[in-house]
Image (tube, rainbow, N blue to C red; front, side, top):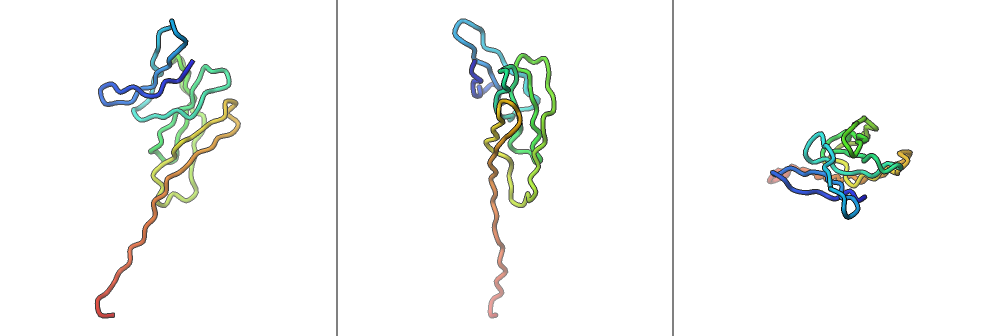
Length: 116
């Protein structure tokens, strides 16, 4: 099976499973638009889904047939200054480790007083 990327339908992102040829594709129930795939479980029956724009990032393990959704982990960042969210989360199939990237945008505002 392949976790097909995203299909646009009515402006919302949807996650579809594209099985081997001859089988019918099906949609994975997403809790909200904008969820991203963090990886497959070791048994290939679940996906790790998260929202990249939320902090802390809530990661759920979702049965691809829609039977169950369970909270897996919350990923909090110690210093959230300038962080827009978690991106490119990858969960190991056994769920024992994960990696992610953050986008941080920092800037300075300097006050310049004329004549000084």
